[in-house]
Image 1 (tube, rainbow, N blue to C red):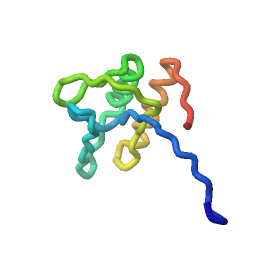
Image 2: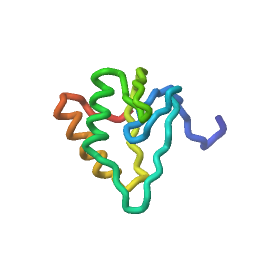
Image 3: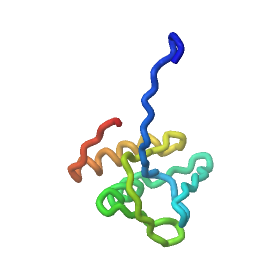
Image 4: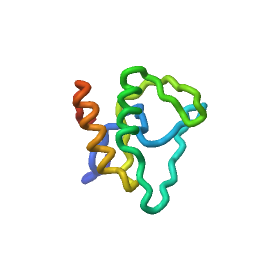
Length: 102
């Protein structure tokens, strides 16, 4: 690295996307939110808890995917972002999970 450049530690982190759907191949399907539309924060939090407990997620097609994850991603670019974080933290802490940064 050249002088003055920050060092970088790269990590391979598998993430579970809390508020997006997946296709049958495990690819993320980005949701489209209409102005003023909000997601169901409680439903999203339960989806994450179910995934943590089972390693599986039910997708929009009705199929179930099974995979591992090292982190939970909550997107902040939608109207429900703050409510999603609050609901998720409450749900996971109540279930005994520790919330921490990677």
